[in-house]
Structures are given as C-alpha cells and as structure tokens.
Image 1 (tube, rainbow, N blue to C red):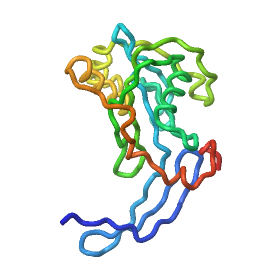
Image 2 (image 1 turned 90 degrees about the vertical axis):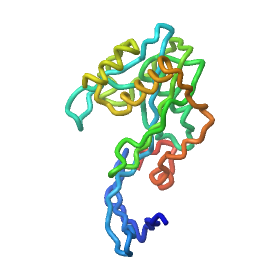
Image 3 (image 1 turned 30 degrees about the horizontal axis):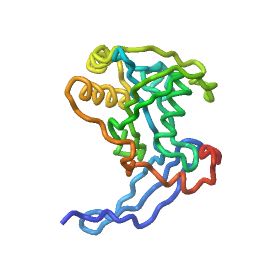
Image 4 (image 1 turned 45 degrees about the vertical axis):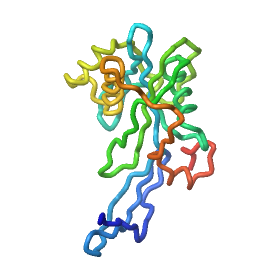
Length: 212
C-alpha cells in the first residue's frame, strides 16, 4: 500500500509578490517526520502560437535567475483572482505577441520543478492567428522583450542544440511537433487544470494577486 505523506504542520517563511515559501512537516514511511521547504506559486500559462506557415511566435526576454536572455513562448502568471486559464492565455498572447487566435487547445500540463516548487503550467496550442493591438508592457523585462517567428522544425533543432533552454518552451515546441508531424491530437480547453496551485491565491484578496 502506498504511504500517505500527511502534512502535520506548515509554517510560512516568506511571502513575496510572485512567490511564497513555506516549510511543511511531513510524515515519512516508518512514522518519522521530516521538513520540506516548498516554493508556492500562482501557476502560469504558455502559448504555442502557430501561423499558417507553421511558424511559432517566440519572445526573447532577460531572466535574472539565469542572468541571460532566453527564447521563450508568450507566457504569464495566473495572477488575477478567479481568472480561468484560457482567458489568461488569451491576455498573455495579446500582451506579449500582439496576436489573437480562433482555435485553442491544450498541448501539455507540466510541473516545472517538482523537487521544491509547486509551479504548474498549462501549455496551449493557438491557431487561426490574427494581429491585434499589443497591450502595454507591465514589467521592466517585458519592455525590453524581442519577438520573432521561428519555423517549427527550426525550433525543434534549437531545443536539441541547447539554444532554447526554457523548459516550458521546450515542452511546448516538442508537443507541437508531435501534433504537426506525428499526428497526435491536443486536448480540449475544457479539461480541468487540476495541477493549478491554490495556496497563494486563497490567502490573497485580489483582484491582483501580486498585491500583498
């Protein structure tokens, strides 16, 4: 029988605008307890937007933790109280790429760093693209963001070569390749995103969950 990793207690160690850190006391096999630190997160969405020429919309953005610019998919936090994942994805696609899409589906749900962080991301496939007014950038890094259309096959090559390092982008690109070249079928946007974290959103009143 699988062990039940019961949480005996939790202590909030850090509460910052986009993350929090808590320490859980967890019952281990044999009855002992151990402490595990968990980085809390809002969850996020990312979009593989593919045009009629099978090119992917990508952005190049500075990431302080990596101290470098990374090629990524349009993406963003689920940091608006009560906002569903599809609405968040549509907002991020317009904000970062100046695009809208007529056809939406789900490519993948992923946990980015399960060893210590509860961040989970729903990766959408967006097709039937059209240009729309791009929203004003809200963050400092977004104001310095570059944009490019990358052919699907080239994007896969760049994942394999190590040029595309962002794990969410790599997952989305390879999943899109499986759809376009391997005949796989993406999932419905109506499928519940059961991995979406809830702890931070439940503690904060909103509507902007980044406000402490």
